[in-house]
Length: 62
Image 1 (spheres, one colour):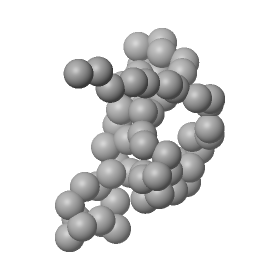
Image 2 (cartoon, one colour):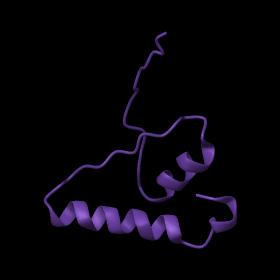
Image 3 (cartoon, one colour):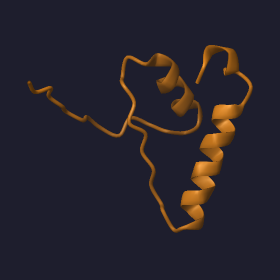
Image 4 (cartoon, one colour):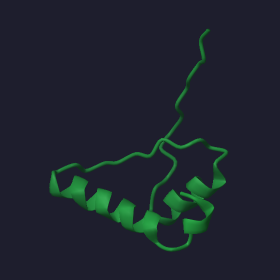
């Protein structure tokens, strides 16, 4: 989300639409892959009921 667009409810509306879309299709669990240091994203998803669901490991290769 561009900084100038934050706080307008756009992200919340998009997330709500995605959750409705999933629910309408019988999907019962959603996850969001976000970087743990992206505190704005962590705060956003936490405000919408998302909780820490574990750990994901990765490795860069040459």
